[in-house]
Length: 119
Image (cartoon, rainbow, N blue to C red):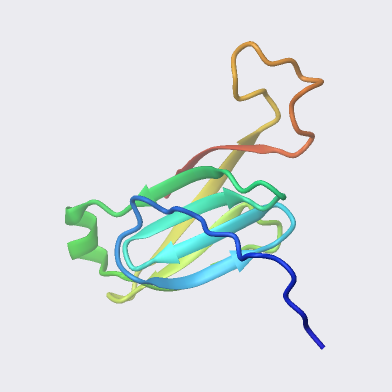
């Protein structure tokens, strides 16, 4: 039996275009795929938006909108199928370097930090 005991978390996702078609969650990343964009969030207790890629108008016309998505087994690539039959491969580039220039390595998380999302 499932009993809800707190308020749901609400994530503000500015920049998302179209309806969401897929959401993936694991211990490291929370990924939301809409018709025209891919957003990557941290999956920890406090969710931070780590990266986003929105299809430019020219690419959206050529490739079509996102239809489905699938992670690679090691969570380093995300494959997104489009309505025009294209398969877009997004590579997640990570680094253990601190995000803030003056933060020390002892205060930074031991998890990899997403630097960019590209295809």
